[in-house]
Image (cartoon, rainbow, N blue to C red):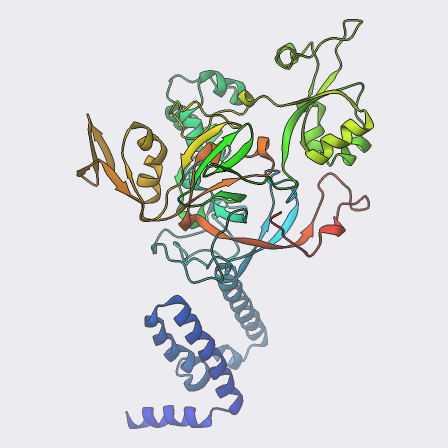
Length: 495
């Protein structure tokens, strides 16, 4: 024992000034992280740091003594890669992460192909629910198509302190709330939409299958060759979405003819919001005209967005579009347009008429399976849950808030006749355990958002996009404007 203590003493006294400086810097950073995490059990990790830099009882760099130069080189590269992966892992969890805009739901504020830095410290980073995961993956390992994380250990929700909290009109990245249960081969439409809103005709039209049951759930499970395996994902492994925060906890939100009202007051509309319009033109619009209107190739693709009276007479009649003097009908485009683009069409005389898309084309709205009478364009009034607030449980409130009570706050809820039981206890009220938000896309008629799947719980909030560091236009070639130079290193604006 004396020799061991002497050996340890010798190691400490022989440590160089550089070793002590590195140990001091890392220790200070580690202590600050411990204070930030408010978990002082982590201070025991200082013993490990002391051994790595000073005492070196464990031969951390023993590979340097390998006689075989090839093995020494492999060990050196392995050491560097492991250190880099650990560093990236912690930066990705606690500081910021990269995110690519995959869909047009926030156009024209954020464009498909924008690459963003998403700040975790703006709202405070979350401690991961599933800490054991392969670095730089979200929920699936590429090529292998298997889970990239371990279900054990599973940590409860905890958020460290950030620079602020979610504010109204913030653009926010969050985990998709309805992404807890997923048919892996068909993530969109989501599992709850498929099993609640889809009927036999819908399944046949989109997937060419004839269900043997009226149950959407059985249809999904019985057609695994199409829908894949149905899996559950913890909060931090659900898909990342990005939308604008419209409604705050405790707000009462209502949409009247596409105008959002909060607590009875109209909310100013962001400058770049766009809606779908049916545009009756005098002739075929050119690619140059679409570019001037900032309409993408997908949105201007005639296979999907051009109507003629012969192939779709019902939309002409619904919009009261009259034929020309010779009995023919003009082309009718369905296009997502900003106010600026609509003004451009009118100024240049490209259209005979312009019609806002009818609200009945918006599909089912939240809450699924309950006839609220709400539509995409006329929605609510809807109260947004706030932590500590209590509601009376009745038929409508159960439809609106059951998912919050059961799925997001992990309670059991049973209804026996007129008796409601939560966690086995009879009750007629419920007090919410966390805050909720109402998120919407700026591409209002082409955004699957809170109007479709409901509230975003506070524990699903990921971070705030702060910088566009790259932007690629998928409609252009590398020598034809593919890189949107005017968007590079631009701060993300909420306006």
